[in-house]
Amino acid sequence: MSDFVMYEEEFRRVDEELRRLYQLANAKLVFLVDKNGQLIASAGDTHNIDTTALASLTAGNIAATGGIAKLLGQKEFSILFHEGDRDNIHISIVANKVILGVLFDQRSSLGIVRLRVKKSTAALTRIFHEMDRKALGENRGRAELSPFAEITDEDIDQLFK
Amino acid sequence: MSFINYSSREINCKIVYYGPGLCGKTTNLQFIYRKTSPQQKGKLISLATETERTLFFDFLPLALGDIKGFKVRFHLYTVPGQVFYAASRKLILKGVDGVVFVADSQIERTDANIESLEDLKINLADQGYELDRLPYTIQYNKRDLPNIVPVAELDRLLNPTKVPWFECVATQGMGVFETLKNIGKQVLKELKKHY
Ligand SMILES: Nc1nc2c(ncn2[C@@H]2O[C@H](COP(=O)(O)OP(=O)(O)OP(=O)(O)O)[C@@H](O)[C@H]2O)c(=O)[nH]1
Ligand SMILES: [Mg+2]
Image (cartoon, rainbow over all chains, first blue to last red; front, side, top):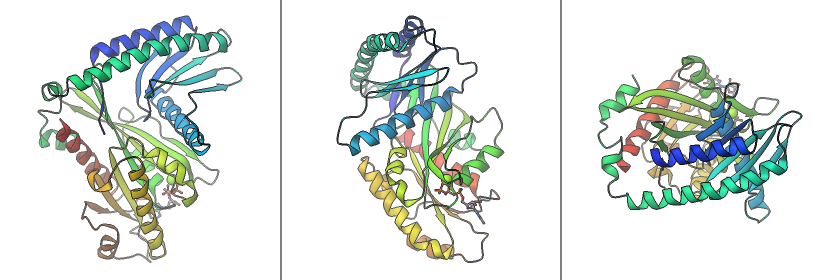
């Protein structure tokens, strides 16, 4: 199983796309999570929101409905929508590998969010595909790039003092 | 599957606490949560039933410190131990970097331990993992109770490959951090090997 590695340049592009989506969808918060629940990036007001917990629960949500889909013998549900009394959340899968969440209230609408998510999904998919290609190509030169190349056992022990 | 972010300079690793129902998985996370400083930890999220049995998972993000300028974070998860939550357990194992098997030392839980370990192996295999090739630590919990199996016997039953193990009383915190440190180190050393 390969690790999920994100480099500066892709991160910037992902970040830019999330910002665009945040503005165009008139959202409260837009966030991207890997399927294991680790937050990749977000745009919007994260002041009163624990984004780490949000990421983990969102991935749990996708995992649970994915389990249901499997049980029913169909592909995973690629879009989930939860309507609340104040805020709503739209959750979708991008490039089969990451989860895009959009939190919005009455200043936006499901229609707008849907449309904008669709456009951003296409852009994000391109970025992630390029990332995969790059990861393949750079496999050999990886040792120099990795912070782990020169980590010693002492460094690790140090962390657990 | 660790997540390494070169932009925010973070490394995130996922550790799953596995074991039979009521063996003390959630108690481990609660103790860790209580004993770490606010800067180090996020919220402890527990998706539990009304009787405090884990329904889907517990989740605790923990920041340990830096290695070579990278922030190292562990995401600790527990699975629901009750037999009928098998489907959920499998989901939690996705992307796991290291496993802690929490065994219940009580004599009457011997079969439950063995079954849970089998269940772990099957669920890992379904995700394309092998327990023998993962960072893996065993914890013999509830050592404070009177009716317990001797550690040597537990080790014979549950630990054929001789992975590191710890005696523990999770309710009092004994052995909890020893277990966490051990699995954490194994995970980082494994990550290092990959590069
Ligand atoms: N005496 C004793 N009790 C313990 C110990 N560890 C946990 N317990 C108790 O065992 C019970 C179950 O603990 P949990 O941590 O909820 O168990 P769990 O493994 O999360 O259970 P599930 O969520 O159902 O899988 C609680 O009442 C704990 O207080 C221990 O070391 N000694
Ligand atoms: Mg529990």
